[in-house]
Every structure is written in structure tokens, then in C-alpha cells.
Length: 434
Image (cartoon, rainbow, N blue to C red; front, side):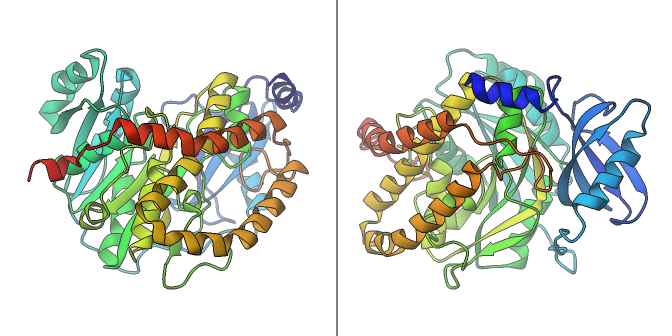
């Protein structure tokens, strides 16, 4: 994808973009702190992308350029005041503190012990008063993950579990089977969780008995390469800074394909379910997810099943993780293809397991396709911004990536059927033990 790489480099980000957090005492208030993203270098001269907080609450992201000799905090605070004016969402936190339910954090991993250690360190620093951490080692080739957990983290309460069936959904289901929390939270081995992540993800369940799932905010931990910058320029995994509630009893007007547009709900790197609700719908479909021929869609399937079962799904930007995006163009191409495949694989899974949903999907398709064309035209016109919803630079989305997504979408149903044959007869782990 050389044309896209050249385009990014022409915009003056050859050395990458610094990533950090800026906390302000109100949008027009003073700077409380400016810190790098977890584990990153201090922000200095050059391009910088920052999460803006108002007295700790995430409200937006902005991008600015710090010149030679300039104070980075003051430059970025000025950019925040300009770019976020009129865009600060209302505070979605409960008016009164709630008693947090016990939670289990499930991390599925495979042969990435170095990244896993970084994630576990952040998970052990959570401020939630009552939780456990379960590491599921999926179809491992070596003993590295077991040695890491049992040698360095078991004494801190981290549990190690082995899952021989390959695939992210199978690994997640193993976590569902062994976890003892009322709330089951899932994240990936390539994230760093904010200290309040788990508390913010679990709090909505205490406030709303009808809530079946919550998702949270995912921001880039690094923007060092053109591939990372391009991915984040077109949304990355971010779902915005306004809390949302997706209620099957009151479908959102701006989602014509609801509840089939599960990708709008959130992403698997930052999600939590009420344990009873997730088990009641059968958990994750083991024929979906990374590590299977379906290539993805395990999180989308679970979101849709929970919503279709009548539960509400909430999104809270207070629940924040920093995600280490893949760095190369090949990674980005693989990701684009996998997203397309995962989308149609999840829809195939949903319709095969709930065929009564087909008429509802067909009825929504005309409006949904018109909506998708409008979004595509907007993107192809170069209207998507560089990292930060309120950024000022535009990077057209490469046609090569769009073609790969479409090819993945064509493949998705085939991949799902292949994966389904492989797991035929496989029982969910919590069912097999009964």
C-alpha cells in the first residue's frame, strides 16, 4: 500500500505522533497534568495526539503540533479548547456511588508472553474492590505463557487455564466456564488498562438490572508507524466520548440495521457481560474469532445475541484501555480482510443459530445499505480526520483496504462454515462439566 504510506508521510508525521493524556481543570481551566500514554516517551516537539480529560473524565481527543521551545502542555491545552469547544459530552457517571459486583477479567492469549506481562501489570493495578484475573492459554505451542503466569503472577492471584481448541471464542468460553464473577470482563493481551477501567465497566450493571453488556473506550497506545496512524485516522476502535445505551425496546434512530450492526456497539478488547446473560445465550460461537477460518466476529456475535435476547447494551467512555495497534502495512491489510470476514461470518452464525431473525434483517437492508453508501461516500471524499475526532488533517481511506474488506466479506460465510465443521459436536465448557 505504498500510495497510502506516502500520503501519511507527506503530512509531516515521518517520525510518528506522540501519544499522551492531558487533564484540564475544565475546558477553559488550567492544566492539571500532561503525561505520556502508559509506557510511552514524554511529549515534546512535534506532532502529538492526546486524550483530553476534564478533572479525570475523558471527553475527547485532539491533535496538535508543538514547536521548538514551546511548552507542550500549553500548546495542547490551547488545541483542546479550540477543537473541543461545543463537543464536550455530558457526564454519564451515576449521580451516587454504586456497590460494584464481583468481576472476573478474562484474557485470552497465545505465544505473546511479553505483551501479556504488560497487560497483567495494568490489570493488577485496578481500583475495583473485588475481582479476579483468568489467563486462558489458547492452543499453545510452548510453555512460555504458563511459565510467565505461574512463575510471576500466580502469587498475586492470577489464574492460568489451558484451552486446546484453537480460536478466540473457544478461549473466551473456557474463561466463562471457570470464572466466578457476576460480571465477566474481557480484554486482550496487547492492551494497557486504565486503573479505573474495570470499575467503570462494571458500575453500569449495578445501576441497571436490565443491562446485559457494556463496552468501553479503546485508544492507541502508540502512533509510531504509518500503518498505526492510518488505522487510527479512520476511527480505529474508538466509539466516541458520549455514553450510549442500545435498547432493543427502543431501537436507535441512527442505526437502521440495529441490532445487526454489532460493530457499532464496541470491540472485544474492551467488553463485559452479565455472566448469567452471556451463559444463557450460549456464550461465544466457537466457530468465530481470530484463530479460526472465520477470522473474527466472536465479539460481534456475542453483542448481537445478548441484545436480541432482550438485554440492553451500554457504552461508557470512562472504561478506557490503551491498545497497541499492529505496526506494519501487512498487519493492516490482514486486519482489513479479517474485519470484513468477521462481519459476514458473525451474521452467518447469527442467522444459522437464530433463523427467525432473517425477515428482520431483510426488512432493514434497504435503509442500511443507503446509510452505508452515505458513509462510504463521506470517507472516499477524504472527510475522515487524522487521529482525534476533531483533528484538522484528512487522509483518504486507501481503496486497497476497502477492496480487502469487501473480499473478506465475500469469504466470511465460507470461513464460518469451515470453522463450524471443525467444532461440530463441541459443547460449551460450562455445559460439559454438568
